[in-house]
Image (cartoon, rainbow, N blue to C red; front, side, top):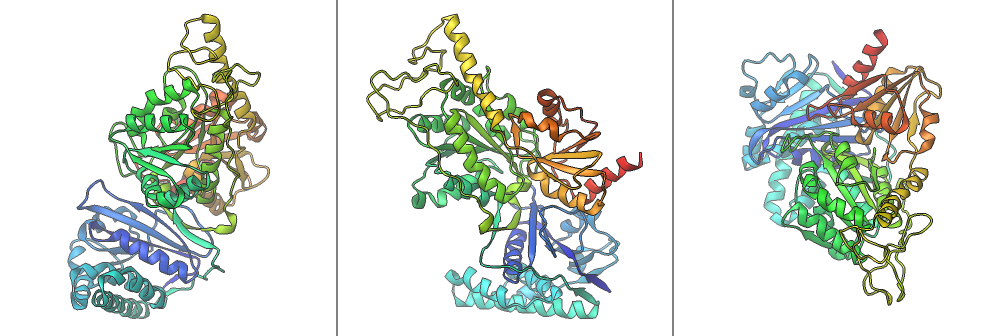
Length: 568
């Protein structure tokens, strides 16, 4: 008997073009309507057709935001999916596949599933993915009602005949799943959550988009590059509703310069890219530094160097954003750990950029952007839109030296003054200069705001025991996996600390890092944040848990890594 009482992990595998993502999208929406906690994450190869893609859907008794390596149920739409996921298939894994897709493979719990025959019976081979959703819902003992309603809406524009064929495919799959569960004594008793209309099912791109709109963004210029393209397309679909100018630039150099031009004119501007695209923007970031033009830069991280693994995940661009641009000037780096936090942090990014006339980076990654989870609307924070533009007078000087290092920011056409700017070193009025004394003051002025930014910096959030001898630090998207790993371990000597602001660091963090052992968990090869903690806060990191394969950390491997240390 297979009994799932607390959670079940279901993985769908198939080639690009077989509708693996379509299956997952449909299933998570149906599960959400039935009141379950769901979390989904996707891995896919960099090709339009073929290869092997997979999506993991976790159905849990409590809210989860992490990837697990173990598979309870695998739905494989081709033989390559079984090969690709073979290392994750355990003795207890139920594998639903066509018989010829598993020939020659030793799989203990194989269930011959006629996806193609059912799809053909419904009217076309393209209905295999609809069959697959029906099979899983039958297996889980969940009514087809919500799925049939979903199909009616999804295919309404294609006519009643297409809807009817999809409904037939879903019923064939559901009957098979129900009969299989009974015959193999498969029981799922995960208790649905107390959901309400307050709950939203979104992905990371949508979270960023909501935050960007809420921040009053009025301009985005980007050149498409996965996984950063999602924010561009989100805003493009809603440009007319929120008066946002969307510029799909010819390249990343044009994108950053267009954003700086828009910001110079008074817009709230953002660019969205990935590491390889941002590499082309570095000269523009230096231009933003010397001209003190505010801009928000979203980097959806993926593995490098060069093209690397373009559809995979990594946290490898912290150093890139930290040191980008020639010369010394201020910047801020933020990295959300949840969708709710992303909505708030993007708003904060725009406010900080405007207030301190600087570049603010928001770092995410492919895992974060393509994951799907529920958020409560009541938890979403709406920050006031803080604008810091003044009406200029005839004596206006754009780079006037002030006590706090922040010059009054004017924009062309708003007031009587002339807003002069120059990429050369300049004097207070904006004219280029080679005066060494002025140069010294201007360099100090541009760096001075880092002191204020550090005093205003977000503090990391702690979870786990109040007093622990070992502290595990993570940043960005690794929050969910560390929280769940620590919950599984239940160790009194182990706590977690999540950083959502990576630079500049608050001077108060030193009092939060007083553990005997400091461990840093991050998705890169060298421990970039661990090095930053040592450089800027004098933190002695006793161990780094690193991963740079292109995969996210799984809950199991974080648990194993922390257990290994315990037994040393």
